[in-house]
Length: 200
Image (cartoon, rainbow, N blue to C red):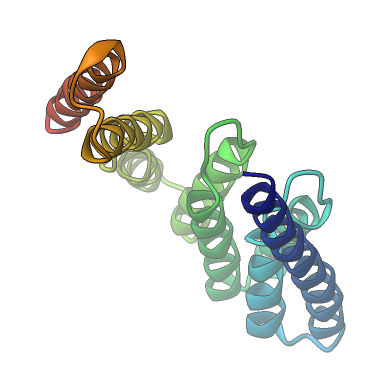
């Protein structure tokens, strides 16, 4: 158990250090590309930084801020394709890094508002405003299961696998076997309920 825990900590530590380095290098590369007015490269690098998510790392937040700044600056100079690219990258990064307890939901909302604003900016009419509202509604239509539901599915799968594994190693009788069967049943019920709710 101690060796397994040490291996897990080592792997997680190495992965965290790697993601932190990617975030730092990507922010620097995004700033360098922006200084040369290489907007696609700056957006790609800022998105990479935003997606380099590690607890406690400042680089994802800075990546999102770079994307927001690139979008706003492109709007100000009337460069709609670049603005759409920046806001699209910001929304994609926010969706890619969704997790239980993550703080990227406000970046997704900001990106969607930016996309709708740019889409309707060419002609500020009632029809354009209606188009922007329709676009926002479409963007915010949550088609995938929520992160919480994914977490429940994962916990249910772990419960079922753990219980079945306990039964597989020979504990088919006694109080341990009853607990294991109960864990498997609870995991299966939680899994089934979550899948039914997601299918609605």
